[in-house]
Length: 437
Image 1 (cartoon, rainbow, N blue to C red):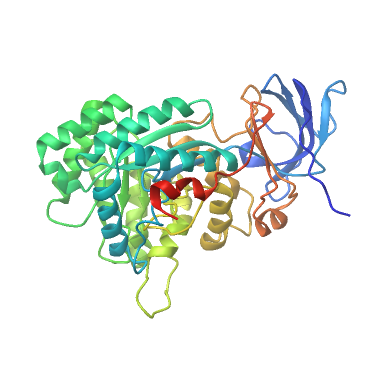
Image 2 (cartoon, rainbow, N blue to C red):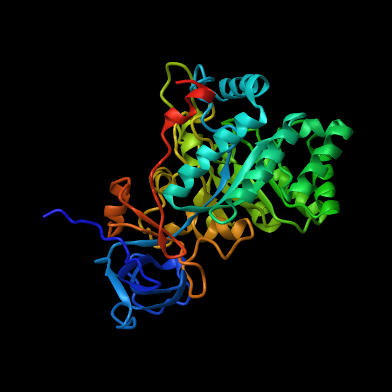
């Protein structure tokens, strides 16, 4: 017999009964938990979660859907993406899959094609995909060399306002820290970020200028009340230790804002003592670290005719053990830095479990695409299931981890404020007039 996944009733008040939830995503849960999963009844009233009860304890006079132990997750948080680069692969592929090939290809495409209309079309396509998959919070990095920073931030501000009821959006300025030497450019960039409510970002590289660059970055952020999100050590070079330099700069400058570091790949290439000292400093400085398992596995240790020798990802478990806030995210989507992807956190989670060995046990693994990323970007109201919150939920037929992680969960149902949304994904043909077939 084929199981037909049942959607919730079209009613103002209803119960999702016998729902299996990742316990780490549910506040004030008081039911038995096995492998990090618990069975509950979720009571929904007028688009809000009214209560979370033990299975069978929900009000009898509510309409109900028996999920038969199917999983229910909160909507996802995807906090390291590149919406401005998304989907340019058909017109500007990476010729060899290398990091330098990606840099050169994106630079060529940006200079030739990134008008406001082009960026907007591709951003909206990406957001429609993310929304259909069940995401409610996204942070994107925006390429921010002049004059692109003005174009992209203006488009972002427009899209953020248009999408505010579906996906909460944040933007980070992405630029080489060398560019701060141009004081006029940097001042204009900071003004643009402040006007848009964004974050300072950047790419750190080893060199004699790194210390003053970081000091200037942190002083500027403190002066203007900005948080910082950096691209860090995205390389297999053991000598790349800018993560350590960033932690030292946070402490040296007494910076009190939030600092996030993405990638941090070279940490996994260093000897145990060197890596351990850096991890300790990162924890002391309060830096959050985002791992990008799919993109880093794609780019790192790629050499012609040679099988890669490592997975490309950072020391995730060691950072967690040290008390560092951690999460995983999509990163790039169908662009020269990652040829694949669809901004689907279920795919990101599934691959993260496999690549980072987040299993055995899986008890708290669900946090890496829900509660943890939401907290890192200052939105602890997202990525959780709690009474009093909007009923923004993702329903799955899968009942246990083995079922969830073995299939792509394409039959999921997404609720926003208790209502089933249309999960139709946009057709790539819609982009033919922008990026080619």
